[in-house]
Image 1 (cartoon, helix red, strand yellow):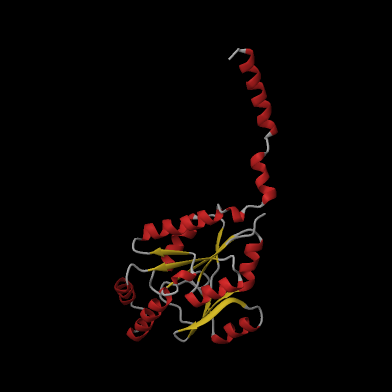
Image 2 (spheres, rainbow, N blue to C red):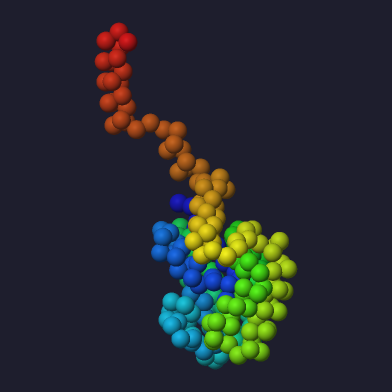
Length: 222
């Protein structure tokens, strides 16, 4: 059995990671979404345990000092992190895992697990991202300004990622991410030699049928 593939999706706040992920997760089999922890407040419409696990700073610190995180970082005064144990369990069971983390966290994951596949989701331009953040109406203007500056900084590291997807059209972005997942699953690096041998073996039940067909062809003189 092959080990699961770890995908890491990263991108600026407001770029549409959550929306793209929700579509992909609804269509892809054997893809486990690792829900991150955060100490920020829960936004309207967000579901605890689905979008994030909303934790106190004390709970987050305790987890960090005991079980540990695959990555963790602080952004705009809030802590974010991915519990490591759950991810490791899924990968060991052969399940593919996808994370939704910011750029620093994504690069930290890559350092700990070089086999991770990093995907950066970017806006068509900064004005479109600003428009999305303003219309979302969940952040103060000062926070939006910080998010835009952070987005510009993050995109300067695009070469550290394996793939870059532009989220200008939702359907296209979803299809692009699914294409990345399919391509990685088909990579020869993922093949388990002992399992691949089946492709050069024969099916005994089908061989009997084929032998009979071949005999009838011979008897007919064709």
